[in-house]
Length: 429
Ligand code: ASP
Image 1 (tube, rainbow, N blue to C red):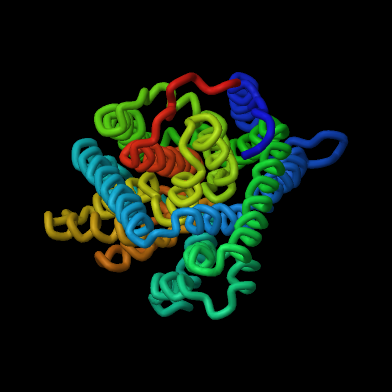
Image 2: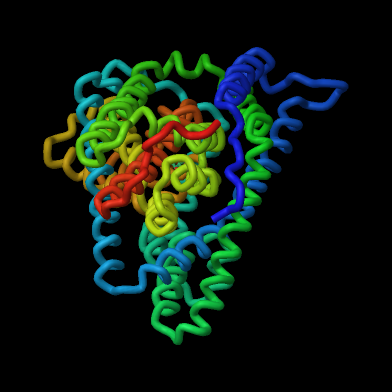
Protein backbone atom coordinates (compact mmCIF):
# COMPACT_ATOMS: atom_id res chain seq x y z
CA UNK A 1 0.00 0.00 0.00
CA UNK A 2 1.24 3.51 -0.66
CA UNK A 3 2.27 5.54 2.36
CA UNK A 4 0.02 8.55 1.94
CA UNK A 5 -3.51 9.12 0.78
CA UNK A 6 -2.98 11.67 -1.98
CA UNK A 7 -5.79 13.98 -3.00
CA UNK A 8 -7.24 13.88 -6.48
CA UNK A 9 -7.93 17.10 -8.37
CA UNK A 10 -11.38 18.49 -7.64
CA UNK A 11 -13.85 17.20 -10.26
CA UNK A 12 -14.94 20.80 -10.86
CA UNK A 13 -11.53 21.75 -12.23
CA UNK A 14 -11.89 18.95 -14.76
CA UNK A 15 -15.51 19.75 -15.64
CA UNK A 16 -14.47 23.35 -16.26
CA UNK A 17 -11.60 22.08 -18.43
CA UNK A 18 -14.04 19.94 -20.47
CA UNK A 19 -16.52 22.80 -20.84
CA UNK A 20 -13.80 25.24 -21.92
CA UNK A 21 -12.38 22.67 -24.34
CA UNK A 22 -15.78 22.06 -26.00
CA UNK A 23 -16.37 25.82 -26.31
CA UNK A 24 -12.84 26.59 -27.53
CA UNK A 25 -12.71 23.64 -29.93
CA UNK A 26 -16.12 24.38 -31.50
CA UNK A 27 -15.52 28.14 -31.80
CA UNK A 28 -11.91 28.09 -32.97
CA UNK A 29 -12.11 25.24 -35.48
CA UNK A 30 -9.13 23.45 -36.96
CA UNK A 31 -7.54 26.44 -38.71
CA UNK A 32 -7.04 28.72 -35.68
CA UNK A 33 -3.46 29.89 -35.11
CA UNK A 34 -1.54 31.69 -32.41
CA UNK A 35 1.64 33.59 -33.40
CA UNK A 36 1.41 31.75 -36.70
CA UNK A 37 1.42 28.33 -35.04
CA UNK A 38 -1.60 26.06 -35.50
CA UNK A 39 -3.52 25.71 -32.23
CA UNK A 40 -4.68 22.29 -33.36
CA UNK A 41 -1.06 21.16 -33.68
CA UNK A 42 -0.28 22.50 -30.19
CA UNK A 43 -3.23 20.66 -28.61
CA UNK A 44 -2.36 17.57 -30.65
CA UNK A 45 1.22 17.43 -29.34
CA UNK A 46 0.35 18.26 -25.72
CA UNK A 47 -2.56 15.77 -25.74
CA UNK A 48 -0.32 13.06 -27.21
CA UNK A 49 2.34 13.69 -24.53
CA UNK A 50 -0.33 13.37 -21.82
CA UNK A 51 -1.63 10.14 -23.38
CA UNK A 52 1.91 8.76 -23.64
CA UNK A 53 2.51 9.54 -19.98
CA UNK A 54 -0.61 7.59 -19.06
CA UNK A 55 0.07 4.59 -21.27
CA UNK A 56 3.71 4.57 -20.19
CA UNK A 57 2.85 2.71 -17.01
CA UNK A 58 0.27 0.32 -18.50
CA UNK A 59 2.53 -2.68 -19.29
CA UNK A 60 4.41 -2.75 -15.94
CA UNK A 61 1.21 -1.91 -14.06
CA UNK A 62 -0.91 -4.66 -15.63
CA UNK A 63 1.79 -7.31 -15.24
CA UNK A 64 2.70 -6.39 -11.65
CA UNK A 65 -0.92 -6.04 -10.63
CA UNK A 66 -1.96 -9.44 -12.00
CA UNK A 67 1.19 -11.24 -10.85
CA UNK A 68 0.91 -10.00 -7.26
CA UNK A 69 -2.87 -10.60 -7.23
CA UNK A 70 -2.65 -14.19 -8.46
CA UNK A 71 0.47 -15.08 -6.47
CA UNK A 72 -1.38 -14.08 -3.30
CA UNK A 73 -4.51 -16.06 -4.16
CA UNK A 74 -2.46 -19.17 -4.77
CA UNK A 75 -5.12 -21.82 -3.98
CA UNK A 76 -6.55 -23.30 -7.15
CA UNK A 77 -10.20 -23.30 -6.08
CA UNK A 78 -10.14 -19.60 -5.18
CA UNK A 79 -8.45 -18.73 -8.46
CA UNK A 80 -11.07 -20.64 -10.43
CA UNK A 81 -13.96 -19.20 -8.43
CA UNK A 82 -12.85 -15.58 -8.86
CA UNK A 83 -12.17 -16.12 -12.55
CA UNK A 84 -15.57 -17.67 -13.12
CA UNK A 85 -17.39 -14.90 -11.25
CA UNK A 86 -15.51 -12.19 -13.16
CA UNK A 87 -16.06 -13.78 -16.53
CA UNK A 88 -19.77 -14.42 -15.89
CA UNK A 89 -20.25 -10.80 -14.85
CA UNK A 90 -18.49 -9.52 -17.95
CA UNK A 91 -20.50 -11.66 -20.34
CA UNK A 92 -23.75 -11.00 -18.47
CA UNK A 93 -23.42 -7.21 -18.38
CA UNK A 94 -22.28 -6.98 -21.99
CA UNK A 95 -25.34 -8.97 -23.00
CA UNK A 96 -27.62 -6.64 -20.98
CA UNK A 97 -25.93 -3.64 -22.65
CA UNK A 98 -26.43 -5.08 -26.14
CA UNK A 99 -30.10 -5.88 -25.47
CA UNK A 100 -30.66 -2.31 -24.21
CA UNK A 101 -29.08 -1.04 -27.45
CA UNK A 102 -31.22 -3.38 -29.51
CA UNK A 103 -34.34 -2.17 -27.71
CA UNK A 104 -33.65 1.52 -28.41
CA UNK A 105 -32.59 0.99 -32.02
CA UNK A 106 -35.84 -0.88 -32.70
CA UNK A 107 -37.85 1.75 -30.82
CA UNK A 108 -36.32 4.86 -32.39
CA UNK A 109 -35.42 3.38 -35.80
CA UNK A 110 -32.72 6.03 -36.40
CA UNK A 111 -31.73 4.67 -39.81
CA UNK A 112 -35.21 4.47 -41.34
CA UNK A 113 -35.50 8.19 -42.08
CA UNK A 114 -31.76 8.64 -42.57
CA UNK A 115 -30.86 9.95 -45.99
CA UNK A 116 -27.73 8.12 -47.09
CA UNK A 117 -25.37 11.07 -47.78
CA UNK A 118 -22.33 11.15 -49.98
CA UNK A 119 -19.30 10.13 -48.00
CA UNK A 120 -16.55 12.78 -47.89
CA UNK A 121 -13.09 12.04 -49.30
CA UNK A 122 -11.50 11.90 -45.86
CA UNK A 123 -14.14 9.48 -44.67
CA UNK A 124 -13.71 7.34 -47.78
CA UNK A 125 -9.97 7.13 -47.05
CA UNK A 126 -10.63 6.03 -43.46
CA UNK A 127 -13.08 3.35 -44.56
CA UNK A 128 -10.66 2.13 -47.24
CA UNK A 129 -7.90 1.87 -44.63
CA UNK A 130 -10.10 -0.19 -42.32
CA UNK A 131 -11.22 -2.44 -45.16
CA UNK A 132 -7.65 -2.89 -46.30
CA UNK A 133 -6.60 -3.94 -42.81
CA UNK A 134 -9.45 -6.40 -42.72
CA UNK A 135 -8.85 -7.93 -46.14
CA UNK A 136 -5.10 -8.23 -45.49
CA UNK A 137 -5.98 -10.48 -42.67
CA UNK A 138 -8.28 -12.39 -45.00
CA UNK A 139 -11.04 -12.13 -42.45
CA UNK A 140 -8.81 -13.64 -39.79
CA UNK A 141 -8.65 -10.47 -37.72
CA UNK A 142 -10.20 -12.18 -34.74
CA UNK A 143 -8.27 -15.40 -35.15
CA UNK A 144 -5.16 -13.23 -34.92
CA UNK A 145 -6.49 -11.69 -31.73
CA UNK A 146 -7.02 -15.19 -30.35
CA UNK A 147 -3.48 -16.15 -31.35
CA UNK A 148 -2.14 -13.20 -29.35
CA UNK A 149 -3.39 -14.81 -26.15
CA UNK A 150 -0.45 -17.21 -26.10
CA UNK A 151 2.55 -15.24 -27.39
CA UNK A 152 5.68 -17.08 -28.43
CA UNK A 153 7.86 -14.27 -27.13
CA UNK A 154 6.71 -12.45 -24.04
CA UNK A 155 9.11 -9.52 -24.46
CA UNK A 156 7.68 -8.93 -27.94
CA UNK A 157 4.14 -9.02 -26.51
CA UNK A 158 5.18 -6.48 -23.86
CA UNK A 159 6.83 -4.17 -26.38
CA UNK A 160 3.84 -4.30 -28.71
CA UNK A 161 1.37 -3.56 -25.93
CA UNK A 162 -0.45 -6.83 -26.70
CA UNK A 163 -2.68 -6.89 -23.67
CA UNK A 164 -4.10 -10.39 -24.08
CA UNK A 165 -0.64 -11.98 -24.26
CA UNK A 166 0.52 -9.83 -21.39
CA UNK A 167 -2.41 -10.89 -19.23
CA UNK A 168 -1.99 -14.57 -20.09
CA UNK A 169 1.70 -14.51 -19.22
CA UNK A 170 1.09 -12.58 -16.00
CA UNK A 171 -1.63 -15.02 -14.91
CA UNK A 172 0.69 -17.94 -15.57
CA UNK A 173 3.64 -16.25 -13.88
CA UNK A 174 1.64 -15.28 -10.77
CA UNK A 175 0.09 -18.74 -10.49
CA UNK A 176 3.45 -20.50 -10.83
CA UNK A 177 5.01 -18.06 -8.36
CA UNK A 178 2.59 -19.28 -5.73
CA UNK A 179 3.80 -22.84 -6.32
CA UNK A 180 7.57 -22.37 -5.84
CA UNK A 181 9.60 -22.41 -2.59
CA UNK A 182 8.55 -19.73 -0.10
CA UNK A 183 11.99 -18.05 0.04
CA UNK A 184 12.40 -17.11 -3.63
CA UNK A 185 8.63 -16.67 -3.97
CA UNK A 186 8.58 -14.02 -1.23
CA UNK A 187 11.49 -12.15 -2.81
CA UNK A 188 9.81 -12.08 -6.23
CA UNK A 189 6.43 -11.12 -4.78
CA UNK A 190 8.09 -8.22 -2.94
CA UNK A 191 9.75 -7.16 -6.20
CA UNK A 192 6.45 -7.12 -8.14
CA UNK A 193 4.68 -5.36 -5.24
CA UNK A 194 7.33 -2.66 -5.45
CA UNK A 195 6.81 -2.26 -9.20
CA UNK A 196 3.02 -2.05 -8.68
CA UNK A 197 3.27 0.66 -6.01
CA UNK A 198 5.79 2.64 -8.03
CA UNK A 199 3.53 2.58 -11.10
CA UNK A 200 0.63 3.87 -9.00
CA UNK A 201 2.91 6.61 -7.65
CA UNK A 202 3.84 7.60 -11.24
CA UNK A 203 0.13 7.60 -12.16
CA UNK A 204 -0.53 10.09 -9.37
CA UNK A 205 2.14 12.43 -10.75
CA UNK A 206 0.55 12.23 -14.21
CA UNK A 207 -2.86 12.88 -12.64
CA UNK A 208 -1.70 16.33 -11.58
CA UNK A 209 -1.82 17.27 -15.25
CA UNK A 210 -5.27 15.76 -15.83
CA UNK A 211 -7.20 19.04 -16.40
CA UNK A 212 -4.63 20.26 -18.94
CA UNK A 213 -4.44 16.91 -20.70
CA UNK A 214 -8.24 16.67 -20.78
CA UNK A 215 -8.48 20.20 -22.19
CA UNK A 216 -6.06 19.48 -25.07
CA UNK A 217 -7.61 16.12 -25.99
CA UNK A 218 -11.23 17.30 -25.90
CA UNK A 219 -10.52 20.63 -27.66
CA UNK A 220 -8.76 18.70 -30.44
CA UNK A 221 -11.78 16.45 -31.00
CA UNK A 222 -14.21 19.37 -31.13
CA UNK A 223 -11.92 21.36 -33.47
CA UNK A 224 -12.24 18.65 -36.12
CA UNK A 225 -15.66 17.18 -35.40
CA UNK A 226 -17.56 20.16 -34.00
CA UNK A 227 -20.87 19.82 -32.17
CA UNK A 228 -22.62 20.46 -35.49
CA UNK A 229 -21.95 16.93 -36.71
CA UNK A 230 -24.20 15.64 -33.96
CA UNK A 231 -27.07 17.47 -35.66
CA UNK A 232 -27.18 15.52 -38.92
CA UNK A 233 -26.83 12.27 -37.03
CA UNK A 234 -29.01 13.37 -34.14
CA UNK A 235 -31.25 10.30 -34.08
CA UNK A 236 -28.36 7.85 -34.28
CA UNK A 237 -26.43 9.70 -31.56
CA UNK A 238 -29.57 9.91 -29.44
CA UNK A 239 -30.14 6.16 -29.73
CA UNK A 240 -26.56 5.37 -28.71
CA UNK A 241 -26.57 7.91 -25.86
CA UNK A 242 -29.95 6.75 -24.53
CA UNK A 243 -28.74 3.14 -24.58
CA UNK A 244 -25.44 3.98 -22.86
CA UNK A 245 -27.20 6.17 -20.28
CA UNK A 246 -29.79 3.49 -19.48
CA UNK A 247 -27.07 0.91 -19.01
CA UNK A 248 -24.79 3.16 -16.96
CA UNK A 249 -27.36 5.08 -14.94
CA UNK A 250 -30.04 2.41 -14.47
CA UNK A 251 -28.85 -1.16 -15.09
CA UNK A 252 -25.42 -1.00 -13.41
CA UNK A 253 -26.63 1.06 -10.38
CA UNK A 254 -29.44 -1.50 -9.91
CA UNK A 255 -26.86 -4.30 -9.81
CA UNK A 256 -24.73 -2.28 -7.39
CA UNK A 257 -27.54 -1.65 -4.96
CA UNK A 258 -29.50 -4.92 -5.29
CA UNK A 259 -26.63 -7.40 -5.48
CA UNK A 260 -23.71 -5.43 -4.04
CA UNK A 261 -25.76 -3.54 -1.43
CA UNK A 262 -23.61 -0.44 -1.92
CA UNK A 263 -24.54 3.15 -2.81
CA UNK A 264 -24.31 3.69 -6.60
CA UNK A 265 -23.97 7.43 -6.02
CA UNK A 266 -20.90 6.91 -3.88
CA UNK A 267 -19.47 4.63 -6.53
CA UNK A 268 -19.96 7.30 -9.20
CA UNK A 269 -18.17 9.79 -6.95
CA UNK A 270 -15.35 7.33 -6.30
CA UNK A 271 -14.87 6.65 -10.00
CA UNK A 272 -14.98 10.35 -11.06
CA UNK A 273 -11.32 10.77 -12.10
CA UNK A 274 -11.29 7.45 -14.00
CA UNK A 275 -14.54 8.25 -15.85
CA UNK A 276 -13.29 11.67 -16.87
CA UNK A 277 -10.00 10.22 -18.08
CA UNK A 278 -11.86 7.57 -20.09
CA UNK A 279 -14.13 10.25 -21.56
CA UNK A 280 -11.33 12.55 -22.62
CA UNK A 281 -8.87 9.93 -23.87
CA UNK A 282 -11.42 7.53 -25.49
CA UNK A 283 -9.11 4.78 -24.32
CA UNK A 284 -9.83 2.39 -21.50
CA UNK A 285 -6.20 1.25 -21.61
CA UNK A 286 -4.98 4.79 -21.03
CA UNK A 287 -7.47 5.19 -18.18
CA UNK A 288 -6.43 1.85 -16.61
CA UNK A 289 -3.88 3.17 -14.08
CA UNK A 290 -6.39 5.73 -12.79
CA UNK A 291 -9.19 3.13 -12.76
CA UNK A 292 -7.10 0.82 -10.56
CA UNK A 293 -6.27 3.70 -8.25
CA UNK A 294 -9.93 4.79 -7.94
CA UNK A 295 -11.32 1.27 -7.40
CA UNK A 296 -8.72 0.51 -4.73
CA UNK A 297 -8.20 3.78 -2.92
CA UNK A 298 -11.51 5.57 -3.40
CA UNK A 299 -14.03 2.71 -3.58
CA UNK A 300 -12.14 0.54 -1.08
CA UNK A 301 -11.95 -2.72 -3.06
CA UNK A 302 -9.01 -4.90 -1.96
CA UNK A 303 -5.91 -5.08 -4.09
CA UNK A 304 -6.47 -8.83 -4.32
CA UNK A 305 -9.69 -8.41 -6.32
CA UNK A 306 -8.89 -5.14 -8.06
CA UNK A 307 -5.54 -6.29 -9.43
CA UNK A 308 -7.22 -9.19 -11.18
CA UNK A 309 -10.63 -7.89 -12.23
CA UNK A 310 -9.72 -4.43 -13.59
CA UNK A 311 -6.86 -5.32 -15.97
CA UNK A 312 -8.88 -8.29 -17.26
CA UNK A 313 -11.96 -6.10 -17.75
CA UNK A 314 -9.98 -3.45 -19.61
CA UNK A 315 -9.10 -6.05 -22.19
CA UNK A 316 -12.21 -8.16 -22.46
CA UNK A 317 -15.17 -6.29 -20.98
CA UNK A 318 -16.37 -3.66 -23.43
CA UNK A 319 -20.06 -3.36 -22.57
CA UNK A 320 -20.40 0.18 -23.95
CA UNK A 321 -18.63 -0.79 -27.16
CA UNK A 322 -20.80 -3.92 -27.52
CA UNK A 323 -23.95 -1.77 -27.25
CA UNK A 324 -22.54 0.66 -29.82
CA UNK A 325 -21.63 -2.12 -32.25
CA UNK A 326 -25.18 -3.47 -32.12
CA UNK A 327 -26.82 -0.06 -32.63
CA UNK A 328 -24.40 0.85 -35.43
CA UNK A 329 -24.96 -2.41 -37.37
CA UNK A 330 -28.73 -2.08 -37.04
CA UNK A 331 -28.54 1.59 -38.07
CA UNK A 332 -26.66 0.73 -41.27
CA UNK A 333 -29.19 -2.00 -42.08
CA UNK A 334 -32.08 0.42 -41.55
CA UNK A 335 -30.41 3.17 -43.62
CA UNK A 336 -29.96 0.76 -46.54
CA UNK A 337 -33.59 -0.25 -46.21
CA UNK A 338 -32.82 -3.80 -45.13
CA UNK A 339 -35.31 -5.32 -42.75
CA UNK A 340 -33.42 -7.55 -40.36
CA UNK A 341 -35.24 -10.68 -39.27
CA UNK A 342 -35.29 -11.74 -35.64
CA UNK A 343 -32.75 -14.43 -36.43
CA UNK A 344 -30.36 -11.91 -38.03
CA UNK A 345 -30.84 -9.57 -35.07
CA UNK A 346 -29.88 -12.46 -32.83
CA UNK A 347 -26.76 -12.92 -34.95
CA UNK A 348 -25.96 -9.21 -34.52
CA UNK A 349 -26.28 -9.61 -30.72
CA UNK A 350 -24.04 -12.66 -30.73
CA UNK A 351 -21.46 -11.03 -32.99
CA UNK A 352 -21.45 -7.85 -30.89
CA UNK A 353 -20.85 -9.95 -27.78
CA UNK A 354 -18.01 -11.96 -29.28
CA UNK A 355 -16.29 -9.16 -31.17
CA UNK A 356 -16.45 -6.75 -28.22
CA UNK A 357 -14.12 -9.13 -26.33
CA UNK A 358 -11.48 -8.58 -28.99
CA UNK A 359 -11.95 -4.79 -29.18
CA UNK A 360 -8.77 -3.07 -27.98
CA UNK A 361 -8.96 -0.33 -25.36
CA UNK A 362 -7.94 2.38 -27.80
CA UNK A 363 -9.86 5.11 -29.67
CA UNK A 364 -12.22 3.94 -32.45
CA UNK A 365 -11.30 0.28 -31.97
CA UNK A 366 -14.99 -0.66 -32.34
CA UNK A 367 -15.00 0.36 -36.01
CA UNK A 368 -13.07 -2.77 -36.97
CA UNK A 369 -15.52 -4.93 -35.03
CA UNK A 370 -18.45 -3.19 -36.73
CA UNK A 371 -16.90 -3.89 -40.14
CA UNK A 372 -16.70 -7.56 -39.21
CA UNK A 373 -20.37 -7.61 -38.15
CA UNK A 374 -21.47 -5.83 -41.34
CA UNK A 375 -19.53 -8.38 -43.36
CA UNK A 376 -21.05 -11.34 -41.53
CA UNK A 377 -24.63 -10.15 -41.96
CA UNK A 378 -23.98 -9.18 -45.57
CA UNK A 379 -24.16 -5.38 -45.35
CA UNK A 380 -21.83 -3.06 -47.33
CA UNK A 381 -18.80 -2.00 -45.31
CA UNK A 382 -19.23 1.54 -46.73
CA UNK A 383 -22.00 1.65 -44.13
CA UNK A 384 -19.57 2.83 -41.46
CA UNK A 385 -19.27 6.05 -43.45
CA UNK A 386 -22.83 6.83 -42.38
CA UNK A 387 -21.88 7.45 -38.77
CA UNK A 388 -18.10 7.87 -38.80
CA UNK A 389 -18.46 11.63 -38.30
CA UNK A 390 -19.83 11.15 -34.80
CA UNK A 391 -17.80 8.07 -33.93
CA UNK A 392 -15.19 9.95 -31.92
CA UNK A 393 -17.74 11.86 -29.85
CA UNK A 394 -19.66 8.68 -29.07
CA UNK A 395 -16.37 6.88 -28.42
CA UNK A 396 -15.76 9.24 -25.50
CA UNK A 397 -19.07 8.16 -23.96
CA UNK A 398 -18.83 4.42 -24.62
CA UNK A 399 -15.28 4.28 -23.23
CA UNK A 400 -16.57 5.86 -20.02
CA UNK A 401 -19.24 3.12 -19.86
CA UNK A 402 -16.60 0.41 -20.49
CA UNK A 403 -14.54 1.65 -17.57
CA UNK A 404 -17.54 2.06 -15.27
CA UNK A 405 -18.72 -1.46 -16.03
CA UNK A 406 -15.28 -2.89 -15.08
CA UNK A 407 -15.32 -0.97 -11.82
CA UNK A 408 -18.83 -2.25 -10.96
CA UNK A 409 -17.64 -5.80 -11.56
CA UNK A 410 -14.74 -5.28 -9.13
CA UNK A 411 -17.16 -3.98 -6.46
CA UNK A 412 -19.65 -6.84 -6.97
CA UNK A 413 -16.98 -9.57 -6.98
CA UNK A 414 -15.43 -8.07 -3.84
CA UNK A 415 -18.83 -7.90 -2.11
CA UNK A 416 -19.59 -11.49 -3.08
CA UNK A 417 -16.29 -12.46 -1.47
CA UNK A 418 -17.54 -10.86 1.75
CA UNK A 419 -15.33 -7.76 1.66
CA UNK A 420 -16.38 -5.02 4.07
CA UNK A 421 -15.59 -1.31 3.94
CA UNK A 422 -16.45 -0.85 0.26
CA UNK A 423 -17.96 2.56 -0.52
CA UNK A 424 -18.81 3.10 3.14
CA UNK A 425 -17.71 6.74 3.00
CA UNK A 426 -17.45 9.40 0.31
CA UNK A 427 -14.03 9.50 -1.38
CA UNK A 428 -11.48 12.04 -0.13
CA UNK A 429 -11.23 14.86 -2.70
N1 ASP B 1 -12.41 3.40 -27.25
C1 ASP B 1 -12.98 2.21 -26.63
C2 ASP B 1 -12.20 1.87 -25.38
O1 ASP B 1 -11.05 2.18 -25.27
C3 ASP B 1 -13.03 1.07 -27.56
C4 ASP B 1 -14.01 1.35 -28.69
O2 ASP B 1 -15.20 1.08 -28.50
O3 ASP B 1 -13.62 1.85 -29.73
O4 ASP B 1 -12.73 1.28 -24.46
